[in-house]
Image 1 (spheres, rainbow, N blue to C red):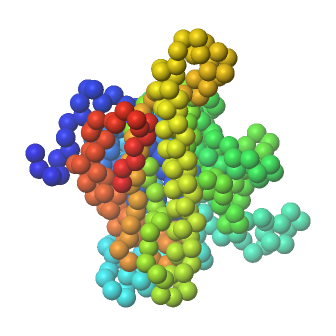
Image 2 (image 1 turned 90 degrees about the horizontal axis):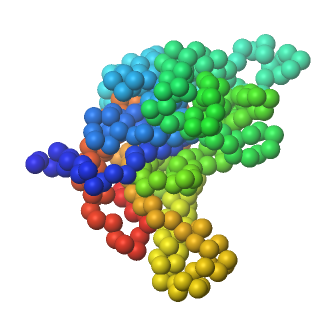
Image 3 (image 1 turned 135 degrees about the vertical axis):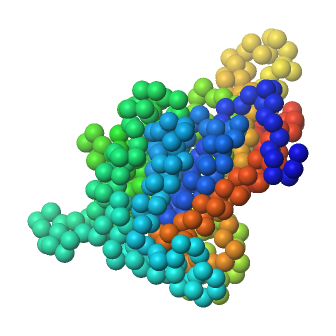
Length: 370
């Protein structure tokens, strides 16, 4: 077996497989690369959850037959980067930095095909003034074309969950194909980041991008009851670690990285601590004398216990050089392809190692790899 060849998945490793996709705009092509690797492996997800651009990627995955998913992802990403770059690949040196900045300015000024477009000047003078800089009607057309929502809602071979925030109440909501009928509006709501994009109306309420509240759906997937032992690939596009900034643009980039990455780290650590406590409760309950175990207090405590085992695999886009604060709206074709290829490579490397196949220590309920 070569280093690049993943070990076979033994029948004894019977955990369900989840894929959770963070928000991050243009950076989401990294997630598509990760999924392309998983799609060809023994770890095809049965549950995909996403926020913002992660919700769009998740919907394309869940809303297509397995053999078409990667092609549909490619169609989406090539479609929205179609007019953003003259270079088919990323140039080196100062030209790379210039191209990155240029693609960001292009998106701000002209929008992205099949995704969003600047509002017309007259819209700012209408009686009901615009409450966003861009219109996202094109995204609904794109989702309708690339996603089979009947498949999501009827076949349910892949569960889909997307997160958004209620504008009126400030409460976070998950739209889950397990419990409701998913429509294009649910996916659009998850990516309706203000003030760029308008809120999306769903059943009389309006919703904004779920990243305002939590930029990763990890805890929702792992905490959902009834829990199942699960291997979850957590794909993030903002890196917690980074070098000291050298200019104001790098300061703004590090600020964005830390703000989004810290939420993911906090969510992961909170779940790990909570689930280890659940295991400790279960182990303690086994040691109680029958007369104590039968007491109401002991039974109440036992209800918080759990025997499920969770493996979390962190795959994070880690660029070698700063990309600037505009990196999440740098929709250049070359940058998109570079991130996609990095996702492919990172996922292949992780599958080749497959650290989750090592025996789970008895005292642990959660392992985190990455």
